[in-house]
Image 1 (tube, helix red, strand yellow):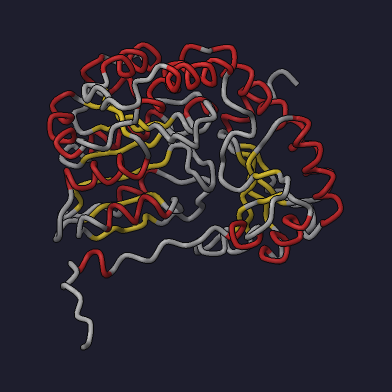
Image 2 (tube, one colour):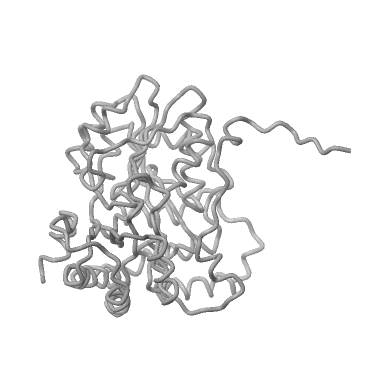
Amino acid sequence: MDKKLVKVCPQVIELKDPELNYYDIILSGENRTLLKLDNNESTLPPSEKVLNSLKKTIEGETLNHHPDYNIGKLKRKLSHYAGVSFNSITCFGNEASMIESIGHTYLKQGLDALATWPNEGLVSHYLCSTGARVINSQFEDPFKPRIEELISGISNKTRLIYIGNPNPITGSLFSEAELVFLLSYAENIMIVVDETYFEYSGCTIADMIESYPNLIVVRSLSRAFALAGMDISYIMTDPENLKFINRLAIGKYPNMLARNAAMAALEDSRHLENTIYQINESKKMLYSGLNMLGYDFTISPANFITLKVTEPEKFTLAMAEKNIYVKHLIKYHGFENHIRITIGTPDQTGILLDILSQIRTGPVKSSHNRLNRLTEHRALSKS
């Protein structure tokens, strides 16, 4: 008897299958010590307060109870940290659930979503799951995008615009003035500004959510707070927007362990300050070292660099053989010869530079080597 499947909805059929990370394949069946610099995660462990909180939660014999669906305690911590009202925040157990809930709140078949390019595949994947058409905005220079180029992609079907600020691939930033102009111009379109790297860049427009009801600011505690394994994300927007978004958020809130870890992390400002300090010290080392080695590079205002090489797959494998894992950007059109590398501590950066000096597959030194304007101001002003 032939097996017959129940008909699948068109938007799911059109979604691409998830891809295995290349290091999963390389490390299959092996246990190796490595320097994982491929996914913009913190290379530092989380705060001791986080570890103590997790231990107390486990020993407290409360894991048999469902967590509070109001997530009130965590929201109060985030409200104080972000400087926005308690009623303007909601939390999710991971970034995917957050994007999915936003997408399904505002999009449907026949509508368009505009996303800044390049972007992480997660964004397009979950926006496409709504049945809407996702259009990647093209820029003449992705490292220096102009808001006018983004606006030119808006049509009468555009219902949502997703902006990584900083961009997760190039590190490019739109200024506050540019985003305010967009919010005013596209007042009937929901503008989602992803500030996942806020702690590194220092740039935010979260204080504008009261003035612009078409603004959603999203962030994550997975990067600078070293909680990628728990991946807590949160939304800041007008409370009227949250009425509808929360209808799709049931069951997607952080679990009890993640909530307590997040609250502990938010209480340890010294740990966060030390993380940012070490990243900025590493940026100084990279700027000097990469110029000396002759690589063509960009240092982002976040916690990563992009490096231009002649043979990215060969380069990536050569790095992996040295137990350093980086991300090639072959699947991103226009970035086929680029590598993204997470910035770690100064000690880790010293190791990275030593390996890069051995491999040296980069092109000759370029006059385009650059730090993002914000990085140059913040990271190098004290050098």
